[in-house]
Amino acid sequence: MKIFIDTANVEEVRQAYELGVLSGITTNPSLIAKEGRDIFETIKEMVSIVGDLPISAEVISLNADEMVEQGKKLVEIGPGIVVKVPMCEEGLKATRRFSELGIKTNVTLIFSSTQALLAARAGATYVSPFIGRLDDINMIGMNLIEEVSSIFKTHQIETEIISASVRHSAHVIEAALVGAHIATMPYKVIQSMIKHPLTDAGIAKFSEDWEKANLGTF
Ligand code: E4P
View 1 (cartoon, helix red, strand yellow):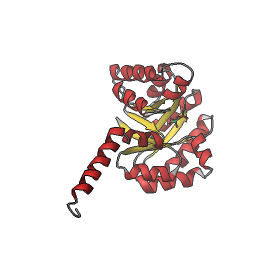
View 2 (view 1 turned 120 degrees about the horizontal axis):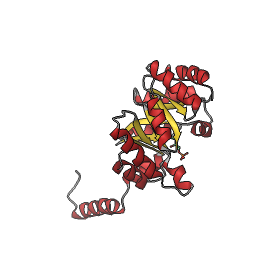
View 3 (view 1 turned 180 degrees about the horizontal axis):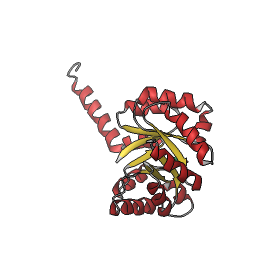
View 4 (view 1 turned 120 degrees about the vertical axis):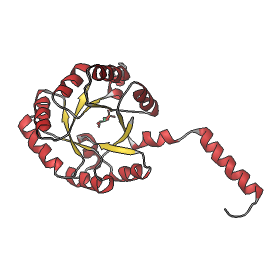
């Protein structure tokens, strides 16, 4: 399973990319708004860091024709741009048009398997089921990933599943186990995946023992 970062903060992208584990980026209008910067400038800076890795940038219109126009502008920013389209009737029409134009799409705000199947049949490159937001309303978000994964496998659907709205490292592992192709997560979740108290204790002990032995510089 591949790791994407879910952020509109360019510094976080830079730091995650330097770790050498990143396969892509997702953004959304709320994340862009939080940073308070121009979307085109933001995505351009991300491209300068990650090159042709996939970067999902979302359209704002809720009309298919306008979505296509906005998406065409977004893909001009760089080679890896994926147009993020909200799941709705107009979004499906736009996804089909993007697919015919050879433009990659990520259909977002997926909360049911029916939505995922329709998005895939409209030609989506990726679908993004939101785990955390389902957990928030007392549903088991991971069940959706498992169901979509099983349907796509049974019917040889090539659309990739991005496990989205990931809140903690256990979500990442569960998503990997049930067959998500990708998990997109905040930088703090990536950082939390690195840490283990036994690793920290082990590093401290190795340093301490080395110092005590007084064997000189390495
Ligand atoms: C995914 O593409 C979305 O940007 C994101 O995962 C939403 O996460 P949230 O539910 O934490 O806002």
